[in-house]
Every structure is written in structure tokens, then in C-alpha cells.
Image (cartoon, rainbow, N blue to C red; front, side, top):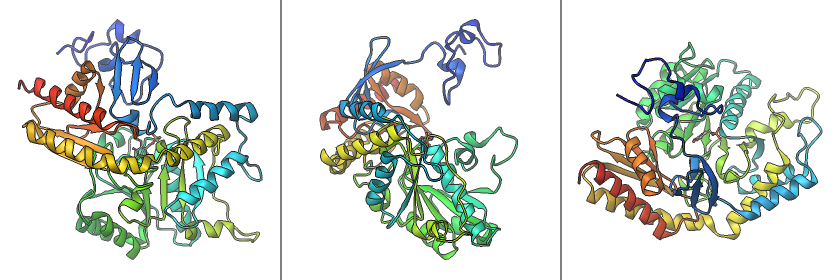
Length: 434
Ligand SMILES: Cc1ncc(COP(=O)(O)O)c(C=O)c1O
């Protein structure tokens, strides 16, 4: 086996790998990516331009984030104007800044949680850390100290900070840190069978469980829409056992389902919602948590004994990120991009069904909103097909389960979407020798 300049797995590192750029890439098998990195220099709409002169269709919206597309000048202008006025000021204790406050109001207005309070930070992994901490803090404050375990689903992805790592349902993200769970007291539950979830709750004991964290549609786990009745069942299990339900909307939030939130799409009433990516379409690093009144009210009581929830970071409520988010949400509404996703949902499903019909190597197609997955027969590698796609001018992404991710920006045209899916078919057929 020869991987670029590597000779054999396990052999000593070759000089060219050691001479790779100083920047340590994320989630990368370094000898494999070394020397073949695609360096993106510019973006416009659904298209990207690389340092080596390629023009690539962004069929995944980056890491599910570039919802309004790349190169939006209004967002650049919003950041520029805010920085001229005030780059940021922290929101610790009695300090705040006007943009973070305004964004809080806007997000509370959009939130499917009635009278939500909004915690702001810098991304999805941050949001998960805060939501899990708040769940544990809540039960401590209630005097139910044993309620500490955080449940998550098999194949779940909730980022890679300490809590995200600990509750990862993709085992490879949790392994290698010396204990089963980096933060103690976490457990995985079945991703599609409510009866097994119930059994796990009984085994651990509801008196020991603080919260269950779930994506509505699993993203990195392979684009897995929920099994019929699953979300309703776990919501019931949570309700009946005093387990907080944390809905991770880092991918689905702000329109990807054709509704503003997946909570609306699936009729859910979570206690907390985590969000990130789609709040700014990636124009600024921003994430946060929407918190239901029964969780925040005790921290707002007018008493000397009122507890403090110890969370926060220098960039929580970053003024420039907040200004960008406010402008971004204005664009989302003004340009009717969420209803546009609702239209694209059926186009995507039709195109995926057609692809499955004409390629035997496609074992399953899955979709919900503008999220799609093309699952390939084990004789083909999704990773290889995605590499081939790049040569054809398209970016797809291999996910768990030999699945190709499809999640283009909301501004994609019907024509671009079908060209992309046709290209996936072409790459699959070329690989399978058809
Ligand atoms: C569902 C979900 N939660 C959390 C995260 C982590 O977000 P971030 O990468 O912004 O930390 C991700 C990232 O892809 C995600 O898909």
C-alpha cells in the first residue's frame, strides 16, 4: 500500500509528511491528507475556488454551515461596520454590549421554546458543553444531586469539546483518553429503538440521569432522519422520568429542515436547544443555547441566595459575531430562504430516489429538509467516490456508514442540485465500472 509519499503503514514518517504545513488539520489522518490538501481561497454563492485553480461546487455547505452561500457582501459590511464601532465587549456580570443584547431578543423571538433565555458562545461544541453543564447544575440546585448522567444516541455527533467527546456516539471520537467517557457519567442509548432507550433508563435509574442529548436528524452519523415515532417516544421517556431533553440543532437550526428549527418540523418541545453554524452561516464563529423558563427562572430570582450559573468565555456574546448574526437572520427572512428550503426538500428527495433507481451500488438514500445521504454498497468506498467527485468539480463528504453527505447552501438552484446528484451518480458508476 502506498499513500502518497508514505511507504507502509506503521513505517517511520517520510520527510514530505514532516515538511507539511505548520497548521495541524482537524480530524485528519495526517499521512493521508499530507500533500493533497485542497486549499480554498475564495467563495461565491454555492461555489468555491482553490489555490490550485479549481472551481468546486460546495455540495455540503462546508461543514453544514454556509447556508446563505459564500461571499455575501452584506455580511462582510455588517462585520466591518461593527468593528469600526466596537469589536466586542464582554458580557460578564453587569457588562454587556448592545449587539449581544439585540441578538438575544431576536433569538428568543425565533425560538420554538416559549420565553427562552439565550446563552451565547462561539460554536456548537461550546454550546453542548454549556447545555450539559446546565443540566447537571439544574438538578444539583433542585437538591437531586444524583441526577448527573448525560445520555446520547449511538452514532451521535455533538462536537469535540470535553462533553462532545464524552457523549460521542461515534466510538472513534470517544476513544483514546483513558476512560470510557472523558467527563464521567455519560451513556449511549439506541439511535432508533425507544424500547431499548427505556431499558437503558431503567438500568441506570432515572434518579441518576440528568439529560438526554439528541440531534433530530443525525448529521455526521450518516444523515439519519429519526425512525417513525422515535423522537416522540424519547420525549415521553424524558418527561416521565424527569430527564431534560436537549435538542442539538447545530445543523438543523435556522432553516435547514425547511422550518426555522427541527423542533417545529418534528413537533418537539425540548428543555434546551443548542445552535451554532446556521445562526451566522459561518460568517462569524457563534453558537449558543436556548433555555426554557423552568431552567432559568431559579437563577433570576430576586434574592441574595439566588445561585449563579458559572459559564461564560471572553467571546460569549461577541459584538461583531452578534452583529453578523443579526444581519444574517434579516437576510434569511427577507430572502425567504427557509420556505425555499421547504421547496428544495422535495426536489432533493426526487433526485435521490432517481439516483437510487439507476445505480445498483446505491443501497439506500435518506433525506429530510435539505439534508441528504447516499449510502453505498460496501464494494465501493464513499471516501473514494468523494475524491473522484472533486475531480469532477463537486464537493461531497464521506460520513459514517459509507454514506455521502448532501447539504448544499439554501441558495442552490434546482439545476445545480440535480447536476450535483447526477455527478454523484457518474462518480459511482465510474467506480463500479458501469
Ligand atoms: C449536531 C452537531 N452538534 C455539535 C457540533 C459541533 O459544532 P462545532 O463544530 O461548531 O463546535 C456539530 C458540528 O458539526 C454538529 O453537527
